[in-house]
Image (cartoon, rainbow, N blue to C red; front, side, top):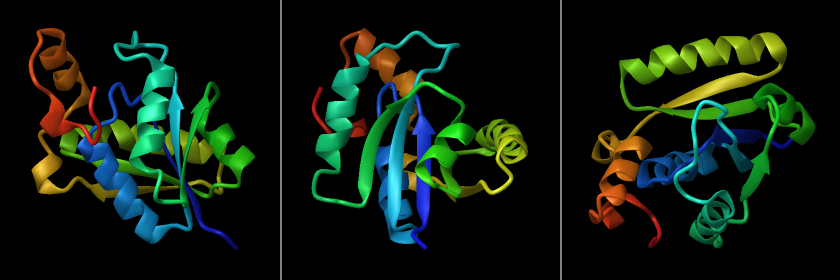
Length: 150
């Protein structure tokens, strides 16, 4: 049976830290679906269709990585795609507290769904999408934090 993982997020923007998690996840799973969802608590900074294209371009040479948009519960999305795993990256204990709560709810909604946490590689631990948006918004160079050119 194929091991499918979903890597969900708003990816606004998709960073080198995210890329690292997908690349490492692709070594663990047969297929990794990068699922860009709409976070109802956030207003997007980068246009969603453009971001999908940039992520697709980033992984164009890795056929086991797929990029999709979704607007439903992540637990339901996993069932629809036959995914038994959610892939998540953790930078720090704050991330763990947040992600643990979400993992518990997802497991309740879909008992077959296992969340797999990967610790962020040290060189990417300081990167956050919110900081990148702030720097970019003031005209700063964010190229060293992104796996593509904006």
